[in-house]
Amino acid sequence: MAWYLIVLPLLAAGVAFAIPSPMWRVRILATTAILHLVGLLAALGGWGMLPAGAWLGLDALGGWVLLVISVLFLVCALYAPAYLALRPDRDGRIFTGSLLSFLGLASLLAQSQHPGLTWVAIETTTLATAPLIYFNHNRHSLEATWKYLLIGSVGIALALLGTLFFAYAASMGGVEEPLLYGRLMHESALLSRPWLRAGFVLTLVGYGTKMGLAPMHTWKPDAYGETPGIVGALLAGGVTSCAFLALLRLYAVVSAAGEAQFANELLVGFGLLSMAWAMVFMVRQLDFKRLLAYSSVEHMGILVLGIGIGGNAAKFALYHLAANALVKSVLFLSAGNIHRSYASKQLPYVTGAIRRTPVSGWLFLLGFLAITGTPPFAPFISEFNIAYSALTTGHVWVGTAFLVLLGAIFLGMSDTVVKVIFGTPSAQRVRTPYKDTFATTAPMIAALTLALVMGLWLPRPLQDMLNGAATMVGGPAEREQAPRAVAGGRP
Image 1 (spheres, helix red, strand yellow):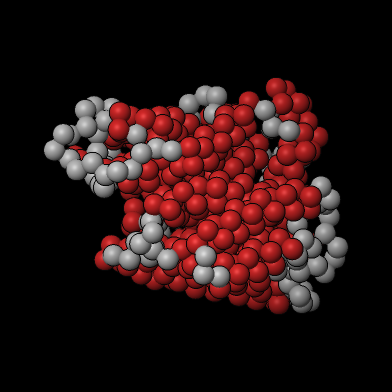
Image 2 (cartoon, rainbow, N blue to C red):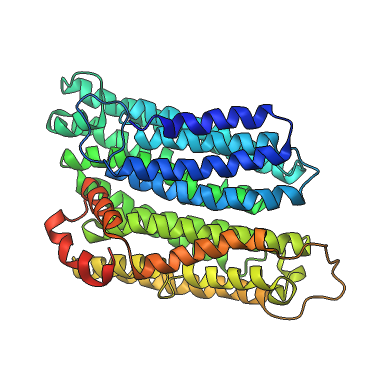
């Protein structure tokens, strides 16, 4: 167990909350993010089979998800000092403390090998991130926070009920406690099928609410629209990844019990529904931060769709988790800069961003191209392979619908993005003092570069970890993956 990955951020959160110096708080935030990533890479050097009876430990699946979160957190932590310097009216004590608490709790969740402990970790990440949504302290952010808490609480309650159903299915089969994931999978043949199915449906709806799958996504447009860009990035790539991991752990149990087809049909249905729902609300969307919220709904749909198709698509769903997190950080942070420059996020008032904030404008445009699957960025690799897997494994109508929805979403998003980026800024619009600086743009450039490199090449250790994680959730066996992994250095 890499306990220090849990303890370090939580201790840092306490220190950041206690000290009065804003300068030291942001230093603690950035230093902890760097140490967490370095410590995680060191821990991942020895990932493998966990000892029997371990409640905590890093396996390939948890390690992959935590690596995504840790890299995303580092990008946000490097952006935070410049952002907080622009907001001297807000006390960064709760902000930095909440950010660091989230990192510690996400580390707990990634290492959890017990469904009950996973549920506790998910619930506490909700509590840790709620103050971040209320950071602006206005009526809209208060409403967004309440929606996040209320809808998230309903979802998390359903997930708890579903987890109890899993436990009852094990009890009916005579499986002894503690009900660790490994034991549930090993003795899955004994689990009661009706209770297992009911449990999966409830956890899919519950954790799907936290992910923001349609139609349980209704907290997302307000939360993403009213929070600072840095919080939006963390919600879209971090909090949703936590919920996805919790769902995957139980999906692996259901698959081991021989109910994969039942679960896959549900995942494919929710995946396509989320993409279609997002497409409808993207068309003629006037609020460009809400546009990103619906883009997040779309990409959560892509994740569960890939898992539902299975095989190589499942592996590229996990790859897409990382690609989406990196590009979403670019989009949310650049959108935050543009919002700050115009003091508005509504389309009639925001045009010509590439003239007023050139670096942020270009990054927003490149982020849009990347997230909509333009080569050679990483999302193109994952979306192409998910579509290819669907069309070549008997899921022709699913693959066709997937491609049609991707095309429609590209057109829907492009209408708003082009108007935000190009055109002539209104002379009547009040111009704020904000200008792009190295500190407010360099973390985004680094994230976009990573998304580009990841689309061209993935180091062998990361390929091995991705393959190992995919095998745990219905991906192809290692021997089937080897030839494709070598070609071009891509996964």
